[in-house]
Length: 465
Image 1 (spheres, rainbow, N blue to C red):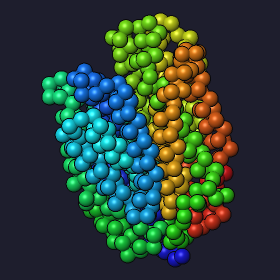
Image 2: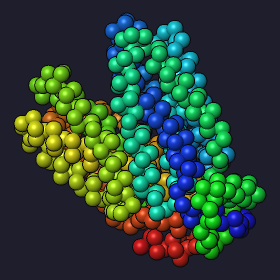
Image 3: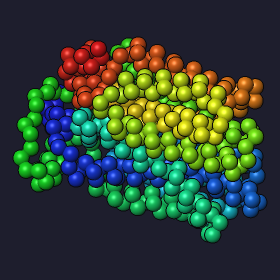
């Protein structure tokens, strides 16, 4: 165990926002956008596969299951790889895995091969978001972190619209194989651009690699200095304890509350998205609307996804992540009660849009910000990855529960499920009482153990209160 004095956190946090930060945002969000594109292209591709006779409904179901199972394993692996070998190593592996598998999918001779390749894609897809959120947090100063995670969320949430639009043009004219070609080529292009992206100095310092951390920080500071001139002075900070910690630290007494809250946040988000939002077209059709009417309502409500990211951008640094999650979880519960009562088209669209916006505000503040912020640098990605595994497990089981509830209780039953999980999340957040807003990542560290928290425990205790 070594005490290092590179002071990476304080040196990064005092930097003004510069071209360097925009480059980091673009490279991280670009990979995450391709991740979302690859996930959402499935809807159009699967329909084309059935229509052409290449697949059946049963094989399509196996394709979807393989995707989620791969993403579940990928979330777990990303946490270990990212904390053990570095953020840069992990996100390059992720992109290479789903990029190469996507290109190979262009040449799949049968559906069985495509399902195997989709599982491999899932490994990379599940890992990408774990690494993206955690890595961005480690570069952005705390005063802007809420807005920047929301910008990343806005870019990622655009994946659905882009995949739908591209599929509308490409699949009828060129065939479904080109969708995988586009995703794979894009992933490898981002992989090449990311080769020059620096490793996280916070991670380097946490591993005791002080010379590498110092060299990386000097390069970053040099880029910012060339743009802005003299930099602000570095505030004093306690040395970071370079320490390898096992996975079991997530379930130790000082950390387990954060681990469970992070997992519940991820579960609640996946239940809301895969139990309600993803089923909107089906719910509308089952309630007697035509397919055209269903898609019309769904499209209007789907604008709530980027809307939630914009709300996060406006309020993430003002309201805070914990308070924002509590507020918008409560708003989702209220809107979830009102929505089934609506009867005319205007009220269905307006309340539905507000409901989806509220859900995606929770996605933005929770998935992209609060979860990775909760954990110290030494095991940030393992904590985020564990939460991701729980969320992926929920996304695999929620559709079956949503269908059963809809058949017995209608859309009110589905929204009751979503509201129940969000209610549990509110309780967990209020019990945990950790607000990450405007806090350095080192100050959010776990109190009671400087080796775990990585910084001054007194400041961390203030964050806990």
